[in-house]
Image (cartoon, rainbow, N blue to C red; front, side, top):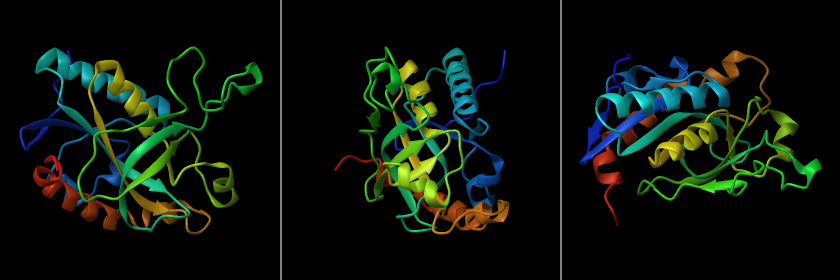
Length: 210
């Protein structure tokens, strides 16, 4: 049996933190949290989050919420800023030749875009699109969302299976210019690490109801 994930405890909440990759888990966050690293993309995110939630259930009970942290691309949002996810869609899903709305999973009673009702105070919100591809340059034209990533929709669906609410925070790492190499993505990750850590430090206040 695997060990239970380490939960973040703040403001009376037991929080499971999930991230896709250690590249986004910098020194500021390392001083504050111990996330579950799921791996990159919708499949790995779904597997990793499901396993982590099952481990919680087996050892210590389900967390009060899941906090999904990571980077995102955007052509319209401020580069280097952090946004919470107001709603997320799955851009890979397209069963429209069979008459289904693009983005809706056939035979699943869910809309194409899933809202995240649990929010943090004072953190700007934006709509997000999840898919298994890196979006760059003209590819943004086909996406109806403010930002893009590769994991959030999958993390949310895993959380829904366990009845655990999720908050998503995404730092904008790229998108203003077309990606040409790995460093175009990593250049702002150190800055975003510090910005995410500052939000973690304020969670006790940000989670309080209005």
